Length: 102
View 1 (cartoon, rainbow, N blue to C red):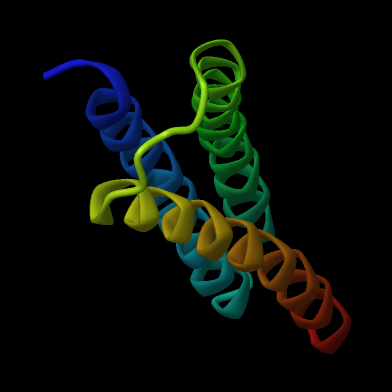
View 2 (cartoon, rainbow, N blue to C red):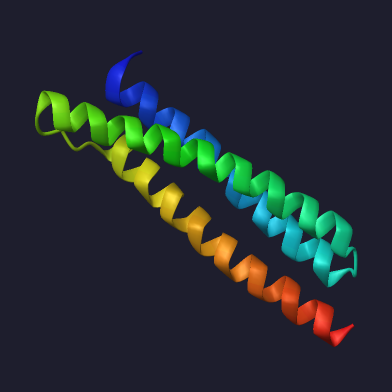
């Protein structure tokens, strides 16, 4: 496997891990473990950054080689990146809310 497929799988992996960390961070905050929540948010952010790095490679590849063939794997990778970003935003807000409540 190479090219777009490999990069798509890398994006799926990094962004899926990021999203999982953000979801776990929300659960930790709900239980009052704010240190763990912050650790998970930081870990998620690191994974998210790696996912964006791979995404940038795809953009550079397209800029150099011309239009990229769109396939379901790439669409799924993009979807994973967007859902991870959304969970990051929601996670940060929910952690702040749980801190204020407790």
